[in-house]
Amino acid sequence: MAAAAASVARERPMVPLAVLLRREITSEKMERPDVLHGQASQSKKGEDFTLLETDCRRVPGDRDADATFSVFALFDGHNGSGAATYAKENLLDNVLSAIPSDLTREEWLAALPRALVAGFVKTDKEFQTKAHTSGTTVTFVIIDGWVVTVASVGDSRCILESAEGSVYYLSADHRLDSDEEEVERITVSGGEVGRLNIVGGTEIGPLRCWPGGLCLSRSIGDMDVGEFIVPVPHVKQVKLSNAGGRLIISSDGVWDALTSEVALNCSRGLPAYVAAHQIVKEAVQVKGLRDDTTCIVIDILPPEKITPAPPPKKAGIGVFKNMFRRKSSESSSHSDRDFIEPDVVEEIFEEGSALLGQRLNTAYPIRSLFKLFICAICQVELKPDEGISIHGILSVPRKQHPWDGPFLCTSCQEKREAMEGKRPSRGSSFRKSFGSE
Ligand SMILES: [Zn+2]
Image (cartoon, rainbow, N blue to C red; front, side, top):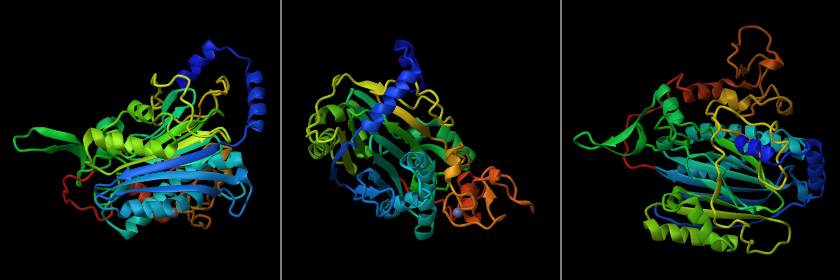
């Protein structure tokens, strides 16, 4: 997006102040969108689960319509459904409990990326005490007004087609086959990555992590593979223009059969629930029912506009805005947004690093929203001197300073070290279960 922003700035020289003022006026008068959704699924193994919550409250009990948000999530389980159902039942609460109370809407949105990281890791850590095997992808979408925040581990992709006709990838593909950086991270952390050998030494199939044979580099669960299969999500936050757009979240059963263009084109103009059924039907027609195939379609529409959504102005021309060119270690900020016209999808935040030190260390002023002497992951209260600095500052017998934070409790620090390969994964076995995910 940085490149796109630069080119927009070059093509459309604007007075920044005027742009900012115009945006301020429009945003004040901008009504909240209608959010319509539908889902469809064809089951082969019964390991896909969804969560559709359309009336969540930022402040519990607040009946103000402006205080509501929606959550749509897809969990594609493997090696059993335990991790998928556990995440479906607990992840939202764990994310919300990591958001400080008494925030304004803007602060709440700014706090979300760090809270999502904390909630994902907490859920994985808790699941570890319940079950050893099974894992799940998670694609977790929060819609608050025109702001869409997507946190993802695994390969259940979420795409956005804006009303202007551009397509954006909002999730990451944590597949070993498509991510050298992740292969490197796992290898350094003690994992073994390779293809499934057949007799004669010819290597076949996708890259897998051993033991276990998992094709994904991140998930919730998968303790039997190793804790270097981390639950730290890629997080992306965008703001749609008040023309809206359509989101499609699908498990790999869809994306292995259909490209984004085909999925969008085959369902264009249909109401969300019909569109979801159409996409699943197309996918199964192409590849047969070889895997659980699930699709959620969400239309974010100007208020009271009746479905079906109008076809985008540039329907089907396949304008792809790949927002993943940036190195995963760099995070974006508001700095280069001032020149973008307000009628397009604006990128607010993106960060994909697997390292907790990077993900929990939010910049000022967001940092000041979070309570200091609370474990940044599990939210347990810490006595002074009890917390472990995320920056690796040793807890030698001296007083901890606020600027040493954020802090982790001992248990979450152990989890962090296991994820980074600095201690053996708990109970890792060397069982090879071929054919999982
Ligand atoms: Zn903790």
